[in-house]
Image (cartoon, rainbow, N blue to C red; front, side):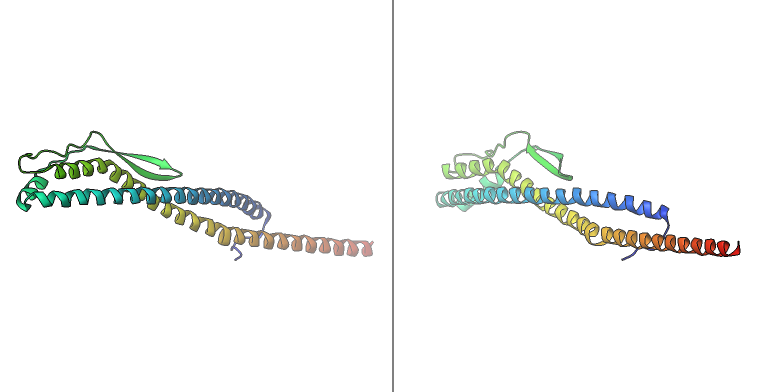
Length: 207
């Protein structure tokens, strides 16, 4: 669609500069989009692999917990589980990944899962809670990774919209307007030349 501008040389030069800038911006955004897609695929595959491993480990924890239920009464088991204190200080930072600000989370100290009496519990419960405590950093890492995947997917969509706006709207509009102004200026130049020739003919005849 042709832009609504005055067809003169100043406007033509300005639009040509805008077109060059738009084309450079389009290339940069397209390169960014391609890089983001590659990053997204790599992270998504990594997240899927880690989730599979963690789910397998959680199933083992559940089996250990079920074995503990077989040797501990529900009353003592519930008291032990609810009485077990788990403390961990979480450190949160931010990192710029290809223009996307993603959170980075880490544990400052190890988790200590045991704070209950051993007289009324079993080794199976100790094992299950120990495994669960060891999984906590991995669960945090997985959550961080999956969140990064989501954030990058949103950035891909935003970048794609900007690429499409440049490729299918702004650049074609600038090119069409530049072509129109160029044709208009050429037409004006031909008209001016024709008028000048007529004036010369009139002056020549009057001599």
